[in-house]
Image (tube, rainbow, N blue to C red; front, side, top):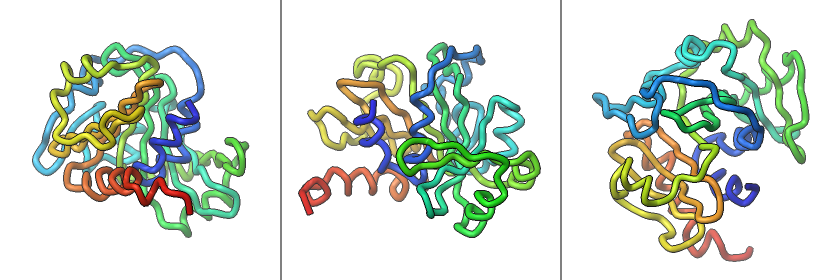
Length: 229
């Protein structure tokens, strides 16, 4: 699992600090079939999935969608601004349980203020800390846009199932390796297919796909990225 999360962490924004939450257990709560990841629907200039639209969805939209099930916290290395992350720990995506992570973008000054004003903080492994948001800060940050969504299913989704549900990817990064990345740029979707672990599905606005997903993945897969020094 650590290897899986390390491979996926470079993909986009602050998904790295959020990834530790995926290790927590818990049974998935029921939700409508509309939440199924293969129900991802193109919209004018964007995409709809998991009951949200990118671009356009905000933290307030997620709050209305999941209420108290939505956890919000700043996750940061010691002395760093970190990132504001949301997660739904028990999420049922069309009958498949798992974790749903929500990425946002906030400036460093705001993130540092949230750390100072936190109601509580707890260790999140190594030098990573989790700073829980106060209720007043949750309300004040409602207009914050969501930058991306990540679904980590509790069960493995084999390549045949993925092809049946999503079709053939437009591009595969690192084909034949343990961790392949299937890209569907028109839908803003990237799937990390791990032959020895769980898959990870990430969605961003299609217009942001190159910057947030494809370019980081290509850079990480290049020989220079894997060579020592």
